[in-house]
Image (tube, rainbow, N blue to C red):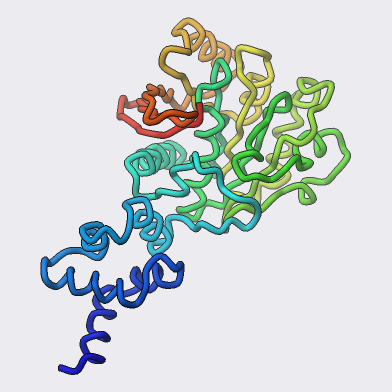
Length: 314
């Protein structure tokens, strides 16, 4: 067999994944041929052969697999995804798989509902609430749900920072009548748009009064299949209760060694008193994985006690 025929056979075996790494400049033609040879000799998958040869890292392989199978894309329509968003950057990580399980359970819960509307709530800041809202919104958009991610924290909203979007106008601008909703929505991915919190207003609670948020959701009811709403810490103000009441369903988030059971119970009682349906509670158990500000978190999802894993910014 000629050398050119061998090269074509090796290229056919590595397929689109090898081509993807070639396009990204992570592998050369010669390295792809080397990996193909290692595959045949040891009957390995492309990624395993590349790891064995030390030509790629597991993170690079996970990212490429995510792109190949449509789980994610490194290219946002606007902005740049923060490195902390492991669900976005490493779609085959254990964390990403567990977030997909959470998504599946929520899809089952809302199976008979016309739309998914869920507010993400915690008693205090730093419990992973905003991170979970972003990850869940991305996850929903990846299964074909047209998703609107809303930063309902008018006091200290930070969702725009996950995508390096500067300080855009947003929800406060719309509620104050300064701009129309369509003027401030930011497309992030196909099927996912962000409504930032916007400039901090002097009267956040008044802007969230019933039925302003409900009317806003109703106004774009036909344009989206899912609404994920981040909120201000429930223990700091009554904004979250007011907002969740209009959304209808809340997902509670707690953190080990930070959230007190009494505080979490109070949040649950406040939500239920406002007529909010509690979808469940996510419990974060943080474990440092390296020096700096990134931490590993174990999530326990509790309506059915199944476990979830995630990584969160401290």
